[in-house]
Length: 82
Image 1 (cartoon, one colour):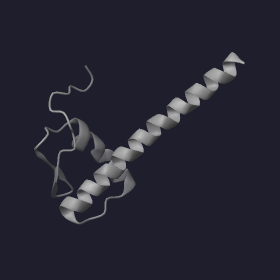
Image 2: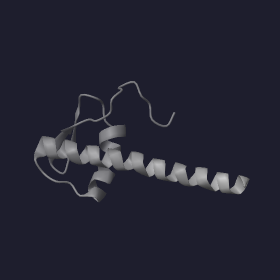
Image 3: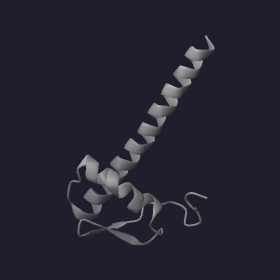
């Protein structure tokens, strides 16, 4: 019984991480569409998540395929990985 519960929890955790990533990919696609009037493929949007959510400074613009897109990070005081 305990193994089943652990397996169920592990599966739920895997899918919740995927859902969060999928939401960020869609947010990148919406931001690029709004700023540049162009569609971004899912794989390219996934590559841009780091640039638009983690590496940028709020208020700055990030170059995405020759287009300037506003940083999507919400908190300028957030330090990733520490």
